[in-house]
Image (cartoon, rainbow, N blue to C red; front, top):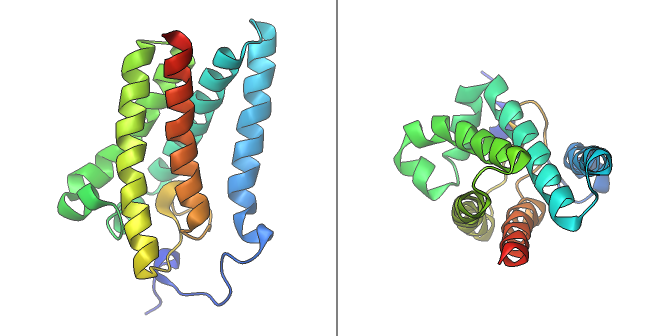
Length: 173
């Protein structure tokens, strides 16, 4: 019986830009869509970052929701809380979607920033530990639809989102 894609080991995975194309495509698309939306309102760095984060998190939540059990299987391999609670692994995409919608609606921004920092910062710790162990899996961050290796790119994504939330928080203060 063959293993699911997130458990299969591939030679030289993560060593080529093409391995990360799905992630780069989502980042670039989120960035230009956010620019288009902020252009129609008021182009400010804060508005653009809100729209970017909202679009990005909503798309990532959607990818996870296509196959929740496959996402949960992969997520439980490295996320510290998901390892202890499969329920958390199933709830996580909804938390991510709620954050995305919070960013898009500018609803209680400081709470959204704090929750983003907590959720993605905690997730980054799990990624660091998995990378230190040499875990070779497809990153469940993109659900089971797109194959991108769990790597320093995943870590950079988590940390980048935390840093953007911190910058937005500082812009509001």
